[in-house]
Image (cartoon, rainbow over all chains, first blue to last red; front, side, top):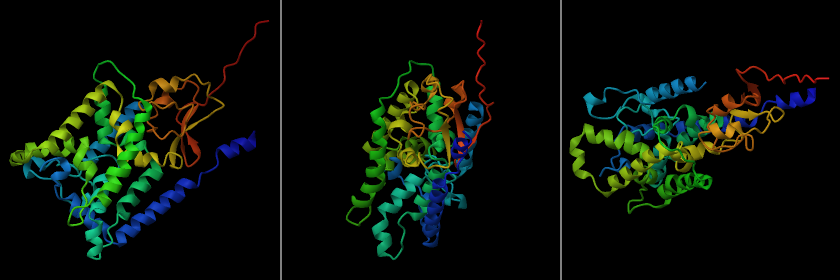
Amino acid sequence: MKKKKNQAAKIRRAPFVAIFIFLVLGAVGISLGEPSRVFEQATRICLSCIGIG
Amino acid sequence: MEFVRKWVQALFFLITNGYWNFPVTKGIYQGPLKVICSPGLNCYSCPAATSYCPLGALQQLLGGIRLALENGQVYVGFYVIGAMGAIGSFVGRMICGWACPFGLFQELLHKIPSPKFGIWRPLRFIKYGLLLFMVVLLPLFAVDAFGFGQTWFCKYVCPAGTLEAGLPMLILQPDLRASLGFLFLNKLVILIFFISWSVVASRPFCRTACPLGAFYALFSNIKLVKLRLDTERCTQCEACHAVCPMGVHFNESPDDMECISCLACSKACKFNAISLEVGGIPISNQAPYRPQKVHLEQ
């Protein structure tokens, strides 16, 4: 029973690995200068994107 | 817990839509926060939006990938996918239940008294098709003469964009009304369709058509924060079936891709068989389950 309880409380490593991979991916994007492009897009109203024009 | 969730939803709504100077400027927020990813579906052309919509940004980046590469700029979406993936790996579709403004909007609509209906479960697969085709493949490959792809989902489907950006911009800038056409009519019909459906069914857009929910659903097995089922405590009473806003049968599929971790099932379970876990460690504010003693009469 004790062994079973220990297994149930075992820390899952997969989420930490996935979070790390995506944070690295995001960091690569930052190093490539993507945030400036995203900022440029996000601060302009894309009329066709919202169904106008 | 439902009270707390509503406050968290309201808080996220205010944080991601915190620019209230738009009636004066008649435009959208253009400050530095616009470089931060909105966890939920929240159009960045909304006048009050303070952050960028990951779906819109991803389509824009994929649509402009050829031109960017030709100019020596490697803008392929790593920054946006990294943000989406980190959020997905951390809480997955908990975002839908706790932080999405459009999810909150649908929940409020569903409170309107009316006959209530379920949603045919196979319809949930539509959103994965929308994610694959309208958010990724079409912006990437269906390009114009200049090599520029369109934001297909935003342009032809997204009801959140019509509600949060299209309609407010028409009010703020009346000159835009002259350029209305079939495109806007199409999006208005889609918005009205989902508003009507939300009154009679729970979260129809989340369950059938949201590509962001579809993306987060891919992390249902590995996300850090998730609900867990104690099979020893579960009596298969199916109390969790009736309360789930997403139509999940939690006792049958605890890692269901539709689960938004709203904790409605946890509250409904009289046997405390459902709890929240972080990275495999259960956390719960409920009292531990004590099996009732059976007194046998002699």
